[in-house]
Length: 196
Image 1 (tube, rainbow, N blue to C red):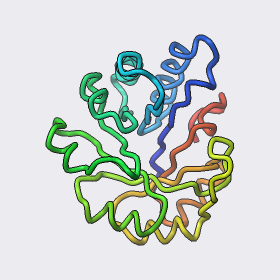
Image 2 (cartoon, helix red, strand yellow; image 1 turned 90 degrees about the vertical axis):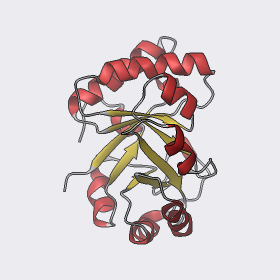
Image 3 (cartoon, one colour; image 1 turned 180 degrees about the horizontal axis):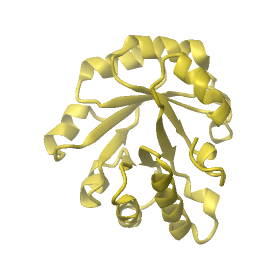
Image 4 (cartoon, rainbow, N blue to C red; image 1 turned 120 degrees about the vertical axis):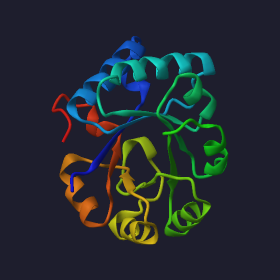
């Protein structure tokens, strides 16, 4: 089974002209075969975030790539995104389902097998993202869960689980062997080497 690939955005990596550069990277990743793009720009004001997400949706048109907005259902709906990714402490997925069109992807971040079980029982979710699996510069100081914890999470739920945190091309096989359905990453997609 090929891994599900999820690019997570971080506009700080693109300098002063970040908006155009980020949208171009998202469009290129879509052409290279990325399945999901999580627009995770938490500190952007609503109008700027909506404009960015709309541009990303346009950039992936004609590909299989789906654009998800981090925790902002209002922006996802306004920008006609394909889904929303909820933080672990966010509102229930059932609230999203009450407002969202069909089809609409809903995912949630989890950090333990217990959280994965609770999220699964909550219902309304299409996938989970679990981490931090390996040490990563974007989450310095956060405890590393490791592959055993990833395996416990994957064994706790029938939902697809994507591993995040320190993901590299070389580690994809290890996370898949631990039961993950794919990976979510920032840095792995920054290189010009294309999609794994």
